[in-house]
Image (cartoon, rainbow, N blue to C red; front, side):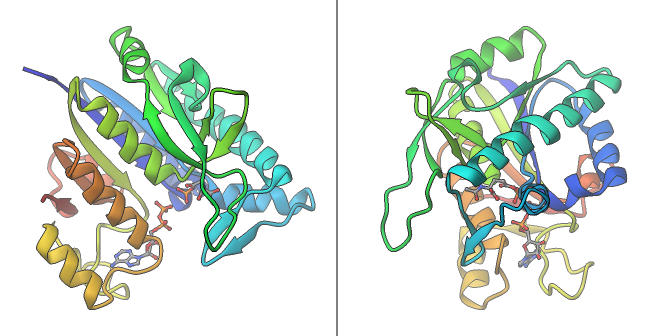
Length: 259
Ligand SMILES: Nc1ncnc2c1ncn2[C@@H]1O[C@H](COP(=O)(O)OP(=O)(O)O)[C@@H](O)[C@H]1O
Ligand SMILES: CC(=O)N[C@@H](CCC(=O)OP(=O)(O)O)C(=O)O
């Protein structure tokens, strides 16, 4: 029987709020068994970039990563955000180790091909080196991944953290029974964005298509849900979306996705 692995992704709004982040990291550190944390930090990169006079360029809500903004991403994601999270996890007795896709050659990517838009130094994931990551896990380290990948020839890329979490979950599923958690500031996927308590408890592929068609899923939830179903279609056992409290055993008020 495969051992269990939990992969949890935290997004910008949780990272921005010190109290929410600390609460989440405490709950994460208590998850039993093997685990991996993946974090974003897009908002922080925009904020720090602005203070450095490097303004974020966005098209349709997506960041265009030129050489300067790649440097900001490297500093903010792999430095500021990653190290603060690792240190806090250590304080909760979780043996965290900070990782980018270049560390231990964990995640190989290539530059996103230019179609209508040239996203610059944005990487599409090619492969996960699951054996290297598995060796860390089995040595009782908890990898903490930031949103950076590399091409094996010295080039780092900015890669969406939701995508990294899904690709890691898929890559690790050959060896582990993997559950993927997307943790953000809302209790789950909401029927109505104005009603914080309108959590849709269960979404399968058919319901997903209906929610897409009637516009219930929008903005950042669109790529997130796409990543969820991509993961489920590639051997990931279970995907959940919710706030930090979804990690509490007694709480079932979050969204579970299945095929
Ligand atoms: N039906 C929905 N339920 C919950 N959130 C939704 C929904 N539709 C759109 N959203 C938006 O999606 C956002 C989450 O996406 P994103 O900001 O990319 O997440 P993250 O914080 O993980 O980076 C929420 O903050 C919310 O504004
Ligand atoms: C290519 C790309 O979109 N990279 C993202 C990586 C950070 C991220 O995903 O942060 P959140 O999860 O907090 O949104 C970006 O630069 O915004």
